[in-house]
Amino acid sequence: MSKEEPETKGCESPSIYKCAYPAPYPEVRVARPNKEYAYLLLEDYAGMVSEMTAVSQYSYHHFVLENENREVADALSCIALVEMHHLEILAETIVMLGVDPRYRTVEKNKSERYWDGAFVFYGTAFCDRLTADVAGEWAAIANYRKHQRMIDDPYINRILERIILDELHHVEMFNHLIQKYCRPKLPKYNP
Image (tube, rainbow, N blue to C red; front, side):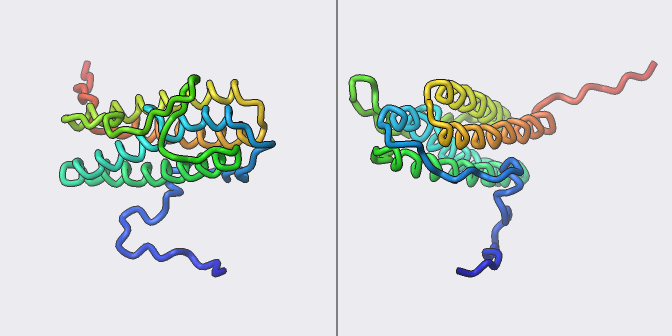
């Protein structure tokens, strides 16, 4: 297998690394199969507040903001790529835990709820979209933290901790964009 860099011709954001926290991802592994843990991770994978929702929402926001603000659109596309990587990591983990990684959640009564495009905040205004994006990151972090407390598997908890680092990085990125484009500029004080 070649160790050459992948070709990025025509790609505005040649590397997701600028949108990922600069630390390695742990090996995807689990201590043992555990369907209950997999069901928890399905919430992070394809629930209302999930990687699937983030990928879809950020991609949509990228498409509609592309002509309005190229910097923000490119950042959204780059962040969506990192969220896709999280989706992949979670899918691999869910499979190792013994569950099919279909885009759904499994409730306590074992009923399934499939991912729905209605989970996406589409919005109509530039700053409302960015504000919703940062709120989604905070909600995802809260879910990951809750699941870390519920899952007694050090491998999974390391994976979740690494994903949280990316989500915190995304909060910083979104806050920078909100500060730059959505906060009114106050006049300078001249005594």
